[in-house]
Structure formats: C-alpha cells, structure tokens
Length: 327
Ligand code: BMA
Image (cartoon, rainbow, N blue to C red; front, top):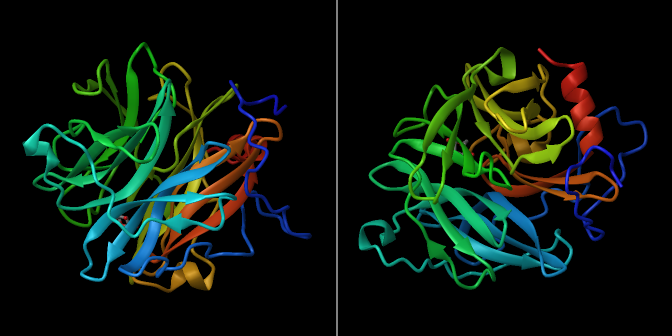
C-alpha cells in the first residue's frame, strides 16, 4: 500500500514501464509513444488531449478528435490494457433536454472524474465562445449533458474526485475567445452542479516554462501531503507557445491554498513527437491513472496537438519533487 495516498484503490492492470536504467527523470515517457496515432479513426486529423479512467476492470475514455474539416469533436473509446485503444468513430452524442445547451458546436480537452456514483465529463465547450461543458455517464453509452458550469470564456475545467465542504469542487482557467496570452487557475464550488460560486484564486503564472499561463491537468490526487495537482504551464518563445507540465500540492479542505509548487517542469517538449505536429512544442496532460497498492502513476498527455502519449511516475516521487523543488 502506498502510504501517501488517501482512499487508495488498487489498479493492478495499470499500464506500466519501469524507469529506464540510468534515467534521472521523475516522470519518464513510454517507449511506445505515441500510443494513439493521429489517424486511429478514419475521420481524424489528430487525436490528443484526452482523458481515460478505469472501467469494468478495463479502461474507458473520452478523446479529443479533430476531424478532417478541423472541427474539434469528442469520441468515446475503450481499452483492455490502457495502451491499445478502440476509439468509436461515431461522434459522442449527449442527451440533453435543454435545447439552448444541447446545440453542440465544438468540444475539446475533456477530463473524466468519478464522484460518488457516476463519471462526470468536463470539456471546453462552445457556448458563444469557449466555456466549461459538463455531462454524466455510468456506462460510456449514455451521456447526459448538464448546464455549462460558467460563463464564457473559460477552459481547463477539472473536477476534484470528492465533494469539498459538501459541494462539488472544480478548478478552471478563465480565458478569452482566442489563444489567450494570460491565464490563472481558479477554484469554484457548487451544491448541485448547476450553480457555481465561492470562487477562489489558486495560482497564477510564475517564471520560465509557466510564465504566460497555467491550467489544471488531470483530476487531482488526494494524498496525505495535500491534493497532488499536475498542471500545464506555457512559455512564449520567439516562435510561439511552449506547453510543459509539472505539479503542485493544494490544501485538502481549502484547495485554493497552495502548499508547494515546483519551480522546474517535469515534462517539456523534448521528443520529436512533442516538438513536431499540428502545433509544435506541446505536452498537455489530461488524465492520470493511479495504482493504490504501489503508488504507480500513468499520465496521459497530448503531444504537439496531434497524438496521445503516456508517461510513468510514482505519486510519492512527484510529491517529493514538488517539496524539494518548491519555489
Ligand atoms: C490550448 C488548447 C489546447 C492546445 C493548446 C496548444 O489553448 O487549445 O487544446 O493543446 O492550446 O495548441
């Protein structure tokens, strides 16, 4: 049992590769990267920034598939091993009784979070601009769309996996209508998943790799040291944005209080598949699986807005990294 995890669930079939001999990295990449190619379904231009969860002793997920008209769509997918994925070529359909919300224009960067008795999917959803869309599912067959969480413009809506102060809790990144040259992480609560409030500032930009904007990544992981948040940060180079990721620890009951935050990145675009693609120099994590018995983590991230990749780590080692390298 990993002593640091709170309420750990075993996940014996978590995808895993040992750290390569001689590696000094806290997070190391799969030698099978990219694990999902851009053309895994016949209509796709690219498949990236996607979310996976354990499901019925196997795995399921919601995938960002930009099609060959370059419309950003969501698709569901299933996998026995978390590495080889069958992505449904049909666009994911939502049930929604509210016509104002039901009109789907585009969706991207999904996250999936189990809370109490169902999965909640959040994504960047068009409603007169980007905002946070939401839906529930129990079976990855029927998806019931909920009210959008916020007004436009917002992105990177990431739920906590349990209620906090009796409320649903979500991180988000208020933005603009375009490629947003700014961005801080905020926290909000809701008693009913309709009305969101108690908005709190969590953290903003810092130096270097996270100097332009930051946004939450996978669902935070509850540890005895605080919520372990993996988040992306953006640097503006003379040649455009560079997306890296690292981690922070947030207070368990007041998650807007940052306990520690790493100064260096954990992963930055180094590999060819991260540096070359539709948008060069992007590593963008949207999901992490954790095995409660060993503390092993499998982090899913989009590379260069083109393909899905996998990296591995130990929860304890990322927590140690954040504390040792806190800014
Ligand atoms: C952000 C989002 C992400 C994307 C990133 C880099 O604004 O659109 O989906 O990975 O830009 O293009």
